[in-house]
Length: 538
Image 1 (tube, helix red, strand yellow):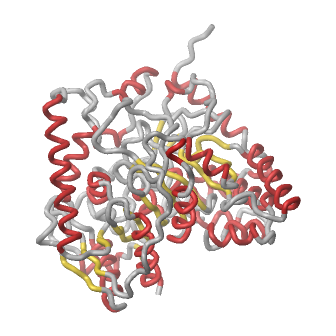
Image 2 (cartoon, rainbow, N blue to C red):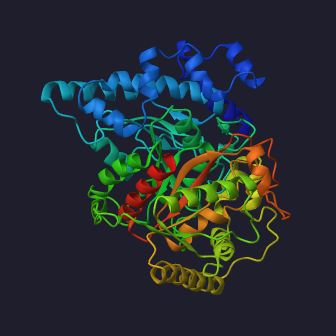
Image 3 (cartoon, rainbow, N blue to C red):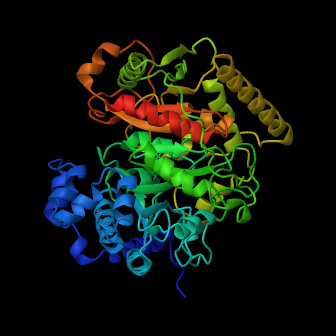
């Protein structure tokens, strides 16, 4: 039997994936050429390519998943109509952005038919997510579907035989699962790029990163090839794609959303900073809708690390929020676009009657928290994730240099260091708690990143998102405004911007704000995020 090279295996997988897109859903060559020549914006292709009917465009461009849920429950739309529309639009998005890994189009349509039969015979939806197509990050296991994580060495593995816990919960709630989405090699970089499925392109501008590690989700949701997606987050991997691609992204507290049953790139038994799963979507109320369903599931019966307590409706939010402002990290200064955006957002909130608190003299540990986190991420002495790469002979992707000691020249981590890291983590968590309590804060507002999406392989360390992971606080990214060279010009400072500030390359890229709440008070953060979202939308 011939031993296939990693190139052969990747080419075969790519051909298999391409063959699953029906001929009638394929973009014309002239459309692809117009995109490559910058004559047609990627985001405009779905409405101009002729593949989607008028009705399918209307379905996929509904405001959010909550609106779609209501239409499905009222039988104004069928699950088959909705699933067909999103399968087609996801196929379009894949051809433009390489956002998908696996497609389950035919299985999804069978599922949709079953849901339509149920609501016809009973008069009731099959569950609170009846008929909603939900996209899942590649790490989630779906029975009968391969999970390769973009490693050439994983392509020899058989399709999985058991669902992830969250997959079972979503199916029980009536959802339709139809695609899995692209990720970075090792899952530990902000550039979603691997040798199996390629590099995810940002729909706003293909020269910019779509973020990671849930970058396929970010691009697909931005393209409206998904109305609701599920990502994971250990350093910002939900929020980074959200801010890069202009969507909402919500990172819950650890244990609120079951994580068990996923395929991991890392070494089992990792402790210190845990990953979590959460939504990328088009509105905060969509995050609310999804998390209510998941929190109310008996997840602790299926996942030993899930807390299993239900949605706890907070008392009515105060009419005036007390909002702390996360200070700039001196080593990672805000670019002019984000400095202007945050200033505008804070001024809007102040004018709406909310109390703003300057935390610049109280939080001086943003950079230290990021340094601590990445020491945790490098604690595995065997560098298991890198061994998965070496096993096949495939090359590492460029952006791994920000996370790993690629040359193996550093000292091997030891147990003393691990104890010290945990002690330092506890100290930062205590400081963060005191900031909230001493200032009577409802929420902290700040950047999720010092700028917008940036050119590929330049994102670097996600200083402003990983803070919430270190202290295990829920956090949410909300899109707000965009990069505008002319308006941003007055905010240019004589500082060392990293990555370099390139105004023309990021023109019109989405800007954002990040909100951070208290640990295990996810419901309160949702409530506060709804208020902030409403103010910023005015």
